[in-house]
Structure formats: structure tokens, C-alpha cells
Length: 75
Image (cartoon, rainbow, N blue to C red; front, side, top):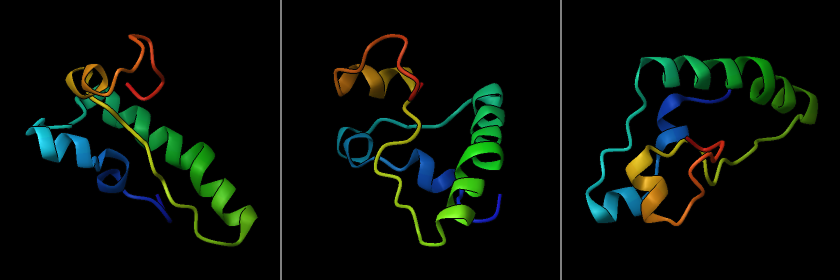
């Protein structure tokens, strides 16, 4: 993980506003690390400019709160 952090991927103003702890479990955290290592960091390196994540991980409760579909890739 070079350009991205887990903290920025789980940041959510909706979660903060609604008091929802948007925390990934162990498997979800491993998946986020794989996403960064295999997709986001290489893309950022290739692009050569910062990439802003506006919607990353959502726990199930947060996903429901924002009206996300049950099988959303955010979860």
C-alpha cells in the first residue's frame, strides 16, 4: 500500500453522522489491501496524479443506510 490507506477507504460522512462504525472485519480488510495493491496503487502510479476515493468500503449497516444493494461491491 503506497498511495492509499484503509482509513481513507472506510471514511464516510454518513457513517459519522449516523453513528455507524464503518469497520471492516479481517477478511474485508484483506480484500481492501488486495484492492489497493493490485488495482488502486498501480492505477495511481500509471495515472501519475492523485486519485480521490469518494466511496470505498461500507459495512452492511452503512450500506443499508445509504440504500445500497445487498451484493454491493462496497461491502
